Picture 1 (cartoon, rainbow, N blue to C red):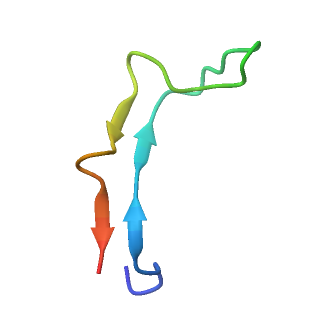
Picture 2 (cartoon, one colour):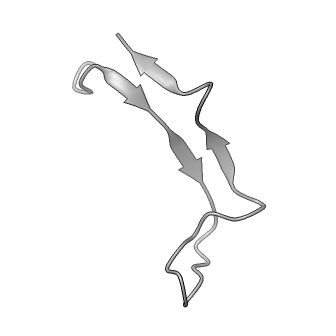
Length: 42
């Protein structure tokens, strides 16, 4: 993690299915690490 700049990061893990109308991949079965528990690199 030495190459990652300091900051706050959010992560979404999902399958490869994408909604054709919205081009989004995040949905009910996605795993996420976001606000208020984002990853902070100090």
